[in-house]
Length: 77
Image (tube, rainbow, N blue to C red; front, side, top):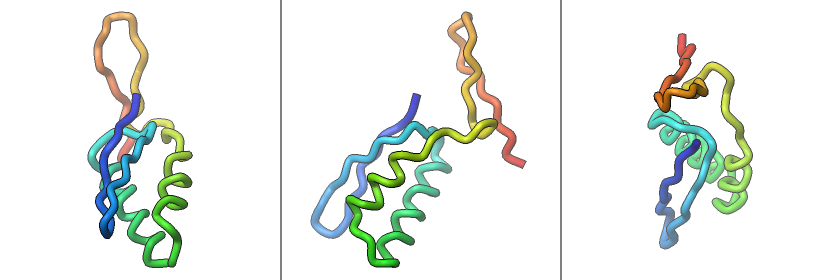
């Protein structure tokens, strides 16, 4: 249903929650944070904006089922 991780920046720690899943999304989000910081934005502003991103259809998308199985579709080509 999503993920959360902590970002340490300067002397602060920031808990970040996202509806995205997967380690590759952690890397992508951290890269986006770095770009935002390099462009002069405040980390709180960046994290707020990134937290609004929704899931991408077909990219590590969970398939609902009544078997209790974790099934995902991933068109990462």
